[in-house]
Image: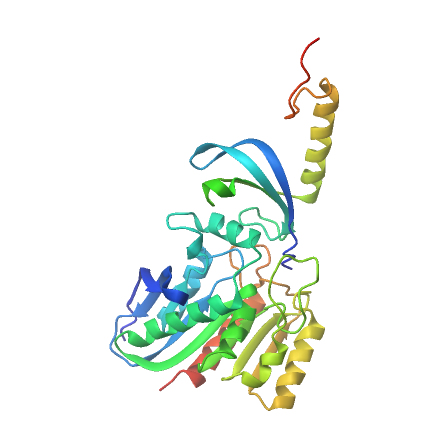
Length: 95
Length: 247
């Protein structure tokens, strides 16, 4: 089935696409047919920057198990680092 | 027998004079022939869809598949164009009708065109084939597992499209419908509803639902491919176009 359902999020970071690095400003997550992965359905994640055009995109297509393992790995990596170390918010000035 | 064909990328004018990339394949022989507009699936203008265009030409038709996502930018990879179009909720119905009308006019402008046009679409293109057949004067239409012909998309879906059932009285040509029994968009009850509506209206139609097949069973490059359904489906398509696109 084509689910068409798409979760969109604002992102702040960078990604490396077909023509090199670009600033990532948006993400889209959807469970649907993959373009390339050899499964009927996958969790598809697009890291994009619409202001730079459709080619500014890093696409991944993961199985459900892989996507859940990725979430867990991200959470573990963040938990192992000092809180706020990778935050995009301005840091408070040192006293 | 002359079964040689020409195939390649052409530029056509679409809805509101937009410039569209399109893949054209046509026989090199001089026999009079019908034209087929191929509407690609939601993942976009891909290699497998171009192979469908080639198949029609090998069977004696001039066929064209406009890249419906051309407006996402020239030189952009088709999968990136598809992702961008998806993020916008798909393409507007009016634009689709205009693009198909222009693609059909392009086919009819080619040498040896007999003036008869068939439209075939897959996935979202199945719905769009029905849309084209209820909006334009064409000669045959094939809906391959198009969703949201009968039901509206669920409210949480980002698609801007609506059910087309109310357009059924305007169906301008015979309709062939090819569906998978295991598909849920469209589910078997939606297929039955559409068949009943066309029956009630006295609209010529021929529907086949294949057991063991779900959505996308014609997609040779995807796990959804179901050879038995696809092989039989292709026979149905060529028999149908043979009846309806001959001069």
